[in-house]
Image: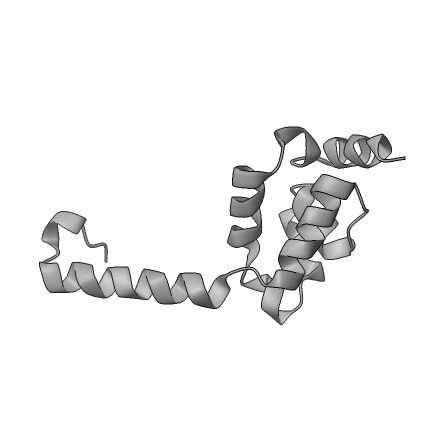
Length: 104
């Protein structure tokens, strides 16, 4: 069953907004997550297996390597990369390899 937003009253919309805010706080990247991303992007420090698979756009590998906390944060990792990282440093294994090679 799908609900169109036009079918929602103000109370339903308010509940949806509150739930979105709760989800954002629950799934927000931790300081440790952000430190790992920043070290890779700004210092070109090789990431661990999970983060590397995220950076390489390998969903299957990322899901397989993720711990319970990170499994639910995949969207947030991609959102952060999209909004904060150069496109040339993520998105494929080749991009990641070339990005890390620049740091040597």
